Amino acid sequence: MLKSINCGDLDTNSVDNSVELAGWVHRRRDHGKLIFIDLRDRSGIIQVVFNPEHALQAHNKAEMLRNEWVIRIKGSVSLRPEGTENSNLASGQVEVYADELTILNESLTPPFYINEDSEVDEALRLKYRYLDLRRENMKNTLIVRHKVVKHIRDFLDAEDFLEIETPILIKSTPEGARDHVVPSRLYPGKFYALPQSPQQLKQILMVSGVEKYFQIARCFRDEDSRSDRQPEFTQLDLEMSFVEQEDILGLTEDLFTTMLETLFPEKSFEKPFPRLTYEEAIRDYGIDRPDLRYGMKMVEVNEIAADIDFRVFQDVVASEGIIKGFVAPGCANYTRSQIDDLTDFVVSHGAKGLISIGVDDSFDVDEPEMDNIRSNIMRFLCVNDVIKFIKFMGAMPGDLIFLIAGEFQSTNSALAALRHEMGNRLGMGEESQMNFAFVTDFPLFEWNSEESRWTATHHAFCMPHEEHLDQIESAPGDVLAYSYDLICNGIEVASGSIRVHDRGLQERIFGVLGYSQQEVSDRFRQLLDAFEYGAPPHGGIAPGIDRLVMLLLGKSTIRDVIAFPKTQSQIDPLFEAPSEIEKSQLNELRLKLTSAD
Image (tube, rainbow, N blue to C red; front, side, top):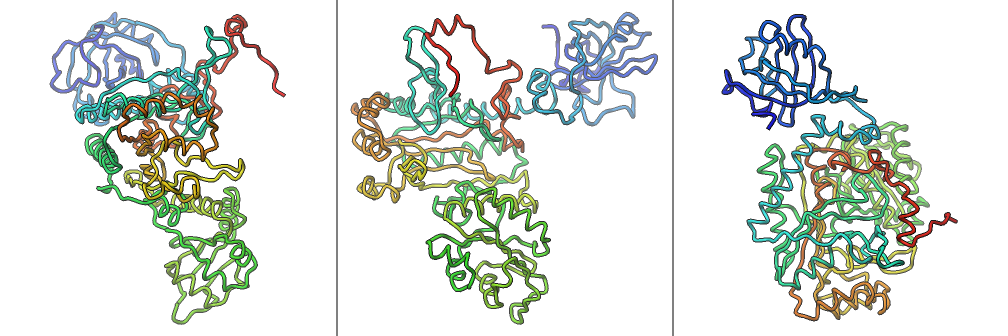
């Protein structure tokens, strides 16, 4: 080894020891006679002193040093002089007097500061990712990610799970997104696909008698990127045989709570995790992954609105739409400009408009006056209408009532976005607060109005509730599944279900989804055939590692917790990918490029 100890491991117990160190020049300070170097390796930073009276040759070499040069030091550890200690460093009580200096490699001037936590354009950071990863924040992120994955492995090993790798080159099967496809050289005109998840493979492992399986799985989906999506991502894939839903939820809760208690003791969370049904989540929050750090539950007010002579209300009630809203505490003094800004916001999320009713601090329900009310539909309201809204929605003087009227799905979606926006504006989300919850009983199917067909809410392999088995074909929209999500602070952290393990039932579900018998045979034969050889009841869950680490570290995008991510536009600036390939490679694959129409 070129070093005998790590920089960050030096402390007062190391005083008078001879050491060999190696790392990067983090910062250089020339004080005339003395030269000070902050030497950095992965473990931390140590101050190195070059004194010409102690080691002239080393001192002369140190005059050449610049930031990010790679060097090796031989020297002895001393206490820092009183008053020069650095409490910000674990090694801040000591320093190393250099006897020898070896320059292992020089460095160009980096395109951004590595020894400062300054803002840097993301494209530049990703182009020079090897430099970005040297920065303290990114280094710590990689360490935390390692510890999270190690905790998962240790926990599941103690629970008697087997870690098993599954193939990366598989057959293209529909699982909710486009596949990334890989042409085969040996079989021209045929293609592999990169797995969107190991869904069928883990179910086949259950048929194989593994009983308890997990994998830190790489998954690939050809879908548009966003802050919590990448074309390739990592998830914990977990499957168990002979289990019911509660077994999986209990195991998942134990995994997450032990992780938080061990690795993140500063985080606060509620135990046991609260439970919401899908229906309750949509009713109260308009979305199946609400941020429960905020209050502001939603309330449907169709009954009140139906008696108000306001055409928007009347039209929505007549068309069996929904009028729904929530109370923003202490926001009655919002200005017209602020309301207009929020109106534009909800319109961008699918609403046709935003109704606001501000209740001034001086409003008295017993002696109400319209002068104490501000609303953009004031001319359609009377005092009794306002009192009904206040009482029904639980508003207090000083609060602001928001209402949206429209079609069910778009209204809930826009209100959910507005609630999240108001929670952020009002500072309701403490970063140290982790509001986990399980959302259960998702519908098995949902209607895709654009394609006029039923699609799977989670995926096609979820087990329906027993009492709904005879409704699969006759009333698909009423069928609930043993499927569930783990959510936290407005993010879906994990998704799972009890799986179908009967061929006949699985084929019925495929039929509702519109697959022909030939399509079912072509895409799912391997799984369906396996079901006929003694498939046990089984189920699982798949937490996203990237999203989890993003959440734990308070990052705004998973790109900041992945070592080598793609940009928002799915470009890799480091390797300049995607890129063209040689014509000879295309010829080997029997592929020919054509221009897009």
